[in-house]
Image (cartoon, rainbow, N blue to C red; front, side):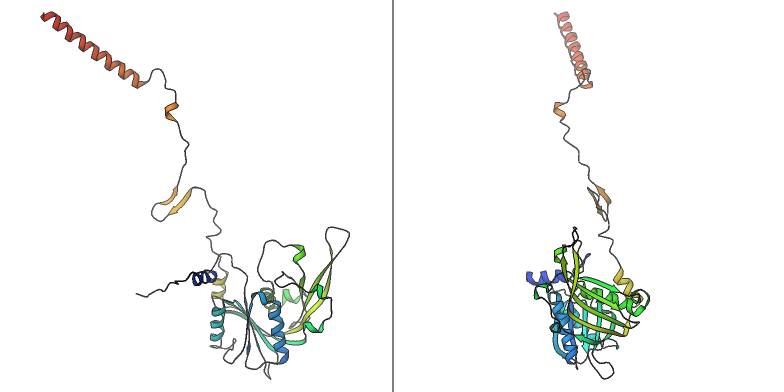
Length: 314
């Protein structure tokens, strides 16, 4: 029999409960790491991405030689880091003569590689190169707008896939309601051609418009870059079906006072008010009263017959 080790410390137990599967998942964490060779441009890009997502990101600065996500067996270390840091999105940077300033963005499911998109970085401008009023700088952890402009995001498969990955990378935690004051940034992603995308980061400035809805102006705060799609790999059909499966436990409507039992099946409870039998008015000709009278009459007749015999004997 296999021995199961249970955590003894409550801190470890709480951490395991956070990582356990949930019906409604929390925001996805991002793992940022680099390969054996990186350029100054690539280091700046990884640094800027970490700065934009530092409230929900983990960055490794050590060089990794054995990570090759597109090759068989080259994703083992990446899946190990994903499980160690509990990150479901990763950004891997590496440069070579064949693919300079190369970035691989991928998603994981159950700490296994789900899909991959490889892009090349061109015309990169860091945040330091933009001049603007520092009061407009977006706050850390604020919810961003994300806009995709261009028909390529609806018709070209590579750009469709890139749109899904970038949306998961930048959107953060999914919420039901937002305050208009907290929306202070926007990512503008434009499809320039069939394999090129322009990405920029802007701050939102709210101005008076004479109505309830304010007028919005965009101020470019950086970073900005061109992303050239080089390779992409979609998830296999079996893994996609498993990842898209929706649990039916949270969709069932709870029925009041009805529980399910494995042996008895559906069991219901009925609550009845106090009937207050002691205060109920009984009818005049009750069966119990008739019986008592009948028994008393029989007893009286027997007593009269016995007394008659005694009188006759005297």
